[in-house]
Each structure stands twice: as C-alpha cells, then as structure tokens.
Figure 1 (spheres, helix red, strand yellow):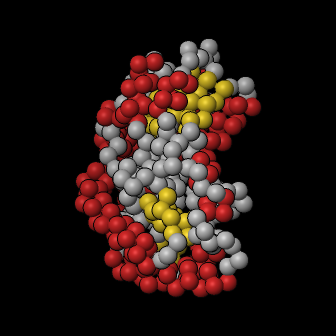
Figure 2 (cartoon, helix red, strand yellow; figure 1 turned 60 degrees about the vertical axis):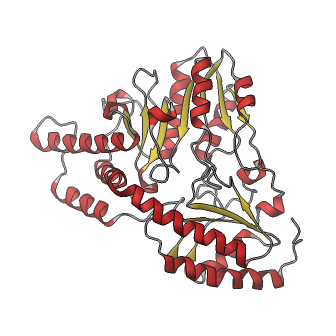
Figure 3 (spheres, helix red, strand yellow; figure 1 turned 90 degrees about the horizontal axis):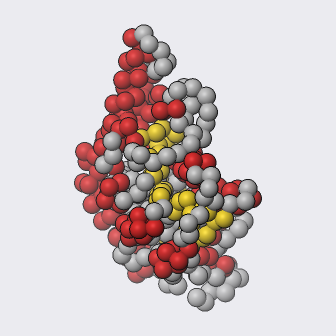
Length: 384
C-alpha cells in the first residue's frame, strides 16, 4: 500500500499507539474524581495539555480539548458570537474547510451576516477586501492557516495586524499546518486556533482549541466543570494521551521529518510535470505546504484516476475528505477560477511521515500509464 492521502488522516505513530495501550490497561479512573486513580488520570491529561501547548507556543491553560478539529472550529465561531451578542458579523474566506463553511451557512440562517473573502488564482485572500469588510458589528475573522486541498498558506500575520488595528478577534484553522510548517500563536498573532490529533499521527476523535488568555467565549457544550467550564463532559482520556504524545514527537523530531517529506514531494511534483502532458498545478508556487500537491489532469475525471490508482494500491484524494462523495465541484478549485471540468479532473497527493522514495518512484511509474490509458477512452475536452 502506498498512502498519499495524509491530509485526510495520518497513520497512528507506533509510539503513540503504545502509549495509548499502556494507558488504557493501567488507568481507568475518572479525571474528575478526587481519589488517587482519578487524580493520576487528571495529571496525565495535564501533561498532554502541556505538550500540545508547547508545540504551538501557548500556555497549557489556553488549550481546551474538543472531540475534533471540526468541533474546535464550531466552538470558535459560535462561542465568540454568543459572547458578543451586540456583534452579528463574521468574515471568513471563500475556500475554508467544510467545518467553517457549513457553520457559517448555519449562522446565516440564524440571521448573522457572513462575508466570504475572494481569493486570487493561487488561493490567497484579498487583504484590501478584508479590511474594507470590517465594521463595528464584526465579531470575528476566521481564515484558515493553509488550505486542505491546495496547500496555499494564508498571510495570517498580516491579517492579524489588520484585526488588531480594527479591534476584531482572529481565529485560524491550523489543522492542516501543525507539524508541516511553523505554528506559533504569538508569531501568527491569533486569538483562537484549531488543531486535530489525527492529522499529526495521533488518534481520531480528539482536537483542541487554543483560546488566548483574556478572550471572552461562551461554552459550546454545557454540563459539568471540565475544560474550565467551556466544554462539559468526561474527557476522552485515551485520545488526549495519544494527542499529547503525537505533539511531543512533532516538537522533538518534526523538522527532520519535514525536510525528508518535502524532498519527496518535490520529487513527485517534478516527475508529474515532466512525464505527464496537459497537467495543471493548483496552489501557490511558493507560499504553500509543500507536502500537499494538487494537479488537474486535463480531459479526465479525478474520480476515475483515484479508482485506477487504488487498483494499484495507491491511495490519493480528489479533495477534502469531509466532502468526498459529493457530486458538487470543489468550492476551493472554483474559487481560484478553475472551470468545472478542470476542477473535476483534479487529484490531491498529500505526503506524510511514512512515505518513502520507493513510494514516489512507484507512483511516477504507474501514474503516467494510467493517465494515458484513461485519455484514450475519454470523451472530455482536453483543452485548458
């Protein structure tokens, strides 16, 4: 198996799995209990919280555990709006993850105003439109750190300066950047930031929302006293322990990992562009997460390419894992100006820690043959 869909999810790091197994065998106490077996679990949760805080340059008291990156995004938007009832406007980008887009569409139905910032051909937001869109009713700006489909990195630091000048809070979805590029909350200047464990070789079912000290936010889930009264419910203890270990590994050896992964990604990109005619690379040529490669194979359907690669044991994606199966054209590729037939011909390759040079060589051997055979039977227009 050659797995090139790491933006959808990553394999569990063996040492993370081992730590989770040892934990679940030895610790079953409720972390809210006052007796020793409960206090021990609480202590281990706090150790994991500290590891996650360190990897993004935050204080552990600024980390709130959630059930996913999607929940963290929902929490950020709805929690801030609930905390500021006199403000009813949000600004976001037109290429956000479905976790943000769907939440914004829900909020619009509830009477909130949402401004969707346009992007250029590379997927970068228009800062002038952003600044002009801010009013005294704007509660929050939410722009993702890097796009999950094309890898384009947004100018979050510049957006932060605008937000601060206008007195508006800023949230970024960093689910696709943690462990891939530098993510530091102070350097970025954000007030809230979403992350997820299963994108960094940790378990599914656990994420976190960074909330800068002093930011007012309302709970998303009401009930007990867990997570500083902001996210009630008994903690997903085994998931949190795995998340903490995954974060520790990234902090200790992430940079070495990245250099190797980026080298493999460059090899794949150069090989596709050299050996396959009529391809279009989607995303910023420089300001992008290099491990994410999105190509349009003109004249074909991306789904047909995906299925043909799968028969060879090569797994890729046609876009966001949260929108796979949808017959609609990618809103991201539409926003950067691709015609529907070009957008539908796109494949995303996302590399990760466990990929090897041999994997890339195999893909570069099989993919040109697959594209050539599919084009022989394709009835689609093959012009850009």
